[in-house]
Figure 1 (spheres, rainbow over the protein chains, first blue to last red):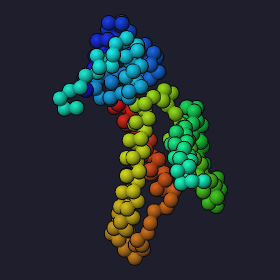
Figure 2 (figure 1 turned 90 degrees about the vertical axis):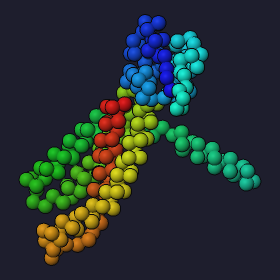
Figure 3 (figure 1 turned 135 degrees about the vertical axis):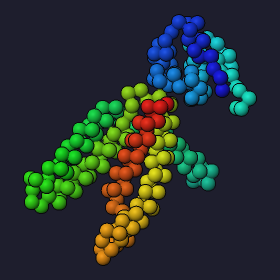
Figure 4 (figure 1 turned 45 degrees about the horizontal axis):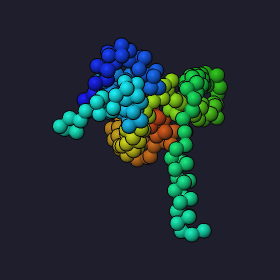
Length: 66
Length: 150
């Protein structure tokens, strides 16, 4: 699964640390999600969508092997 | 009570157990580390301080298990969903490693004893302390490795 978190963060001009505080996870978790090492839960995906003010499917995208 | 009501009550009870927050606050990790150091000091120093320190040895061993349990079930500073996932994976690995260790280690001990002192070689099981200690150390090793490379 691909994601646009890094791009969305850049648009809002916030760091991983800022984003982690906003959604209540650690900075390392944000890093793992950005690097596609961890697929977040629906709850976390919805929190991200709330922060970025975009639907979840605009932030996360399925790949052919998913 | 009808069978349906009984099943629903059982289901609710099971959900309650499933959702039970068994983790301790983060500061218990420090308590655990303190107790672990104290247990280690007691285990090492009892030989030099007492003639027969068997009881002290047993207490120190129990203290060590308790301290490892406290470290194991203490929350991280930020206990998020990724940490919970890593915790589950580390528990699974530690459990499997513990079972394999319990099965293989007595055979290794026996073979080594056969080579070194064949007259005293006895095929024996492992002490409960060793198994529990091994499983908790494995859990902590896997958990901190997973956490580091998450």
